Image (cartoon, rainbow, N blue to C red; front, side, top):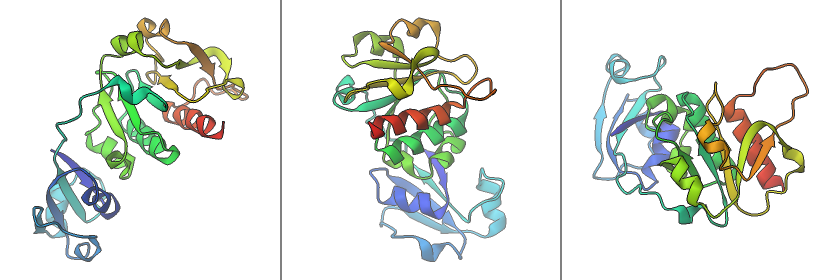
Length: 223
């Protein structure tokens, strides 16, 4: 199981395909629950008790335990006729959560991660998705095998690629984003169909990977 906190996220998970084991809430938060299916255990707790079980520095008054889904086998068919974000070794849970939330905003349904990407059910990742995790499919798979067999273009975010604002993404493909410090690993660079660069106009050394994902998603939708 994994933890989610906050009334907004919990209400979204109640309405999703995820199965909730139990909810722990202070009396003030209980009236805001959108519904309580009969199979969910509900516990009323006080603020001190909630602080002891919360992973947040400032608990939001309600916490839920949610079962990790078991039917998460990845099929490359989900890559056809749409765009997917593929993450090579993203380490920061906040970045992964923000990328999932961004994918949800722009209507991308799949985020595919390398095995050494941070765990999606990390509490900080879940919190950063703000409920979007229940609408975006997140898979973990061997990226080298995937990119070797894939039948859609692979657009890799690199410093020496084509200007993103001139790229013709057409109607399907993979957006490959790398590790925060090292970028895309050497073993995957030769799998890239088109190297793409977000042009720099200032003096910053690099761009946050979650921000890069948002710029790519915006361009995909705009075009």
